[in-house]
Image (cartoon, rainbow, N blue to C red; front, side):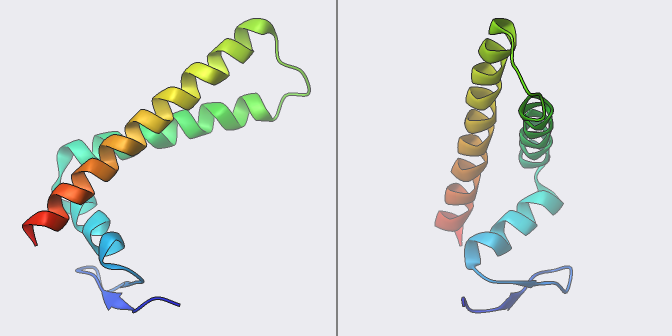
Length: 87
């Protein structure tokens, strides 16, 4: 189990990176936008995953969504790394 730190909202977080993510959610418009996009893509992927069968178009869409979701995640992590170098 990681060290417990307390973020600005009074909630316990287990790593410095999680504390930075919490701060970015509160203070960084781009991070919030990327998080919203990531969540949106995840929801769309969940809808596709719930289907018993995917058409060829849906399979292509699934790959596209996975790439977009990963890109958003990578950009969010880049912001976290940048914030870590500042602290």
